[in-house]
Length: 212
Image 1 (cartoon, rainbow, N blue to C red):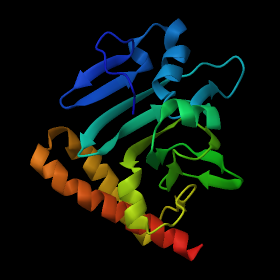
Image 2 (image 1 turned 90 degrees about the vertical axis):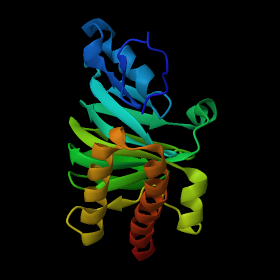
Image 3 (image 1 turned 120 degrees about the vertical axis):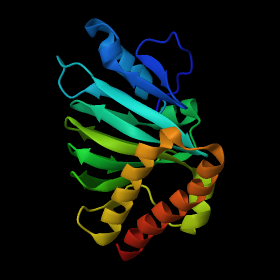
């Protein structure tokens, strides 16, 4: 989910109704800084090893106010601190279905572990740190106001839905399908699906949080 909008930015191209960014589109010597810039609205990104480099790609399409698409990445670490909260101005939730790879994170003192098939959620109005192994996700950005109303005040930051649970399988299938069809969705269809997407995702996330 990149913040860039100019066609001349390195690593960026437009797709039908969406955006595609990849470090494969820039010179190898520039890939680490390019990926840091692409991901900077969400977190500060750095390699897991001092001598390592960053690589990744993302595709983003809008379904109403929801942004969704696949993301790939190599081994890397993320930090979202209070300075970035102020600078980015993002007021959203970040939901990820891990297709491959894993994540270990800390959400304001709560440790989380995410494996393939799991779904996790980060509140972009809160701090967190995480590290990932090489992998891929389906990522969705959801507007805070809509989610908070549907969640009835439940804290969702750091929620993890484990693979294999019926609700996780349902939400995973939904995220995958929505990501695949989002590029060709008409505006009127997108607005209708947006409401269903938020309601379904929040219902599943809130159910798991309530059982913790």
